[in-house]
Amino acid sequence: MTSPVRLALLGCGTVGQEVVRLLHEQSADLTARIGAPLEIAGIAVRRLGRDRGDLPVDEDLFTTDALGLIKRDDVDVVIEVIGGIEPARSWLVEALRAGKSVVTANKALLAEDGVALHEAAAEGGGDLYYEASVAGAIPLLRPLRESLHGDRINRVTGIVNGTTNFILSAMDATGAGFAEALEEATALGYAEADPTADVEGFDAAAKAAILASLAFHTRVGAADVHREGITEVTAADMASAQAMGCTIKLLCIAARGVDPTGRETVSVRVHPAMIPRSHPLASVGDAFNAVFVEADAAGQLMFYGRGAGGAPTASAVLGDVVAVSRNRLAGVRAASESAYADLAVRPMGEALTRYHVSLDVADRPGVLASVASVFARHDVSIATVRQGSAGGPAGRDGDAELVIVTHVAPDAALAATVGELRGLDIVRSVTSVLRVEGGA
Ligand SMILES: NC(=O)c1ccc[n+]([C@@H]2O[C@H](COP(=O)([O-])OP(=O)(O)OC[C@H]3O[C@@H](n4cnc5c(N)ncnc54)[C@H](OP(=O)(O)O)[C@@H]3O)[C@@H](O)[C@H]2O)c1
Image (cartoon, rainbow, N blue to C red; front, side):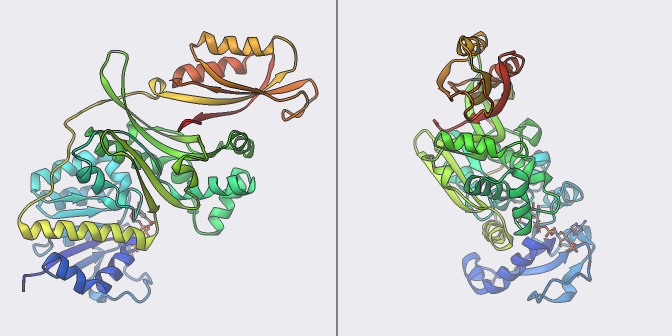
């Protein structure tokens, strides 16, 4: 019998416990698929005494000495499901430099300093796999880094955060405001006690950086991603979207483009946006994730499934463990980081977007012309204008509602247009500003 592949598991919380269970339950199949058994050499945790239910694993395997475990000669593969930047970064760099293969679910670390991990993997000759770091169970990174390597990807648009998708779906279905929908998400366990990383878009931005790096063969870090969360999305915004046959989703968008000098670029952003109900991403409800990929030859592809949770995430982790174990037994390593294209990351102001703007304006002659002239001054072309009646949706006698949707323009020009509208006498208030994606 081939000698076992020995695993060090760093972290045994929501994901780690499911990794242990799957390793136990699937043991015979995993051995057959790999050609050697998988054996847990040790499990590093913070608190030895913590209740972890009836995990099918020997208590003696637990340790608080993660570094000691990583350095052991009989460890081949390190699985990191701790999270955070440090000490995870130092530990994984240590493991990779020592020639071990690493499987990690740590999106924050990959987006913050993926380069350090890739360089350490190249130095040590082991593999670095991280399928679970984006969109949980959904096979997505492997398709990007392998299956689509013969194609040219132009755009990746995704719903990659389950918490915010649950909140926005609830707002869409019930008319609730953000705070009320967040409360429901928290009560049902879809939102953490501190939901900042999710609702402010940090989690989605980290995933956007990872997706963009793989799709465009370019190093993109968290700091390169324009990020806006969903805390400012109101029930009125959702109602405006619904009136247009749209809904609102927190999207991560990574798009290939060309700057004014003709240089190829990539823009990477996370923000709420209106999308038409007919768009495949509009029907992605609850806490599900989905990623829509557009490529030259493949056309449009959609990846859909559970983006989080212990078992779905552990499924992705185990898939990676099988891959890196097979590679070790075959004495090969997967293709290393592909960053040859080195596209310039375009600032948000230059990204081409469309805006939907709702204004509460004075209901008198000439208002429409004045508003239109502001758009024209910023070189923003208007696609549609809808006018409500006086005392209508705007809610005050003598007022009217104007709803304007633009054609694409640089985001900075659109933002400047809205800024100038806010200062006009005839504009009582700008009631809603949303970016529009997907041809709405
Ligand atoms: N949960 C999900 O649905 C999900 C989905 C996709 C990706 N991920 C990623 O998976 C990773 C783990 O998430 P999780 O939800 O499983 O986290 P978790 O439930 O909080 O578990 C974290 C584990 O790491 C251990 N740990 C923390 N700091 C440590 C330290 N300094 N030394 C040793 N062990 C330490 C903890 O030990 P104790 O048990 O002793 O406290 C715990 O076992 C994160 O990177 C997360 O972003 C999670």
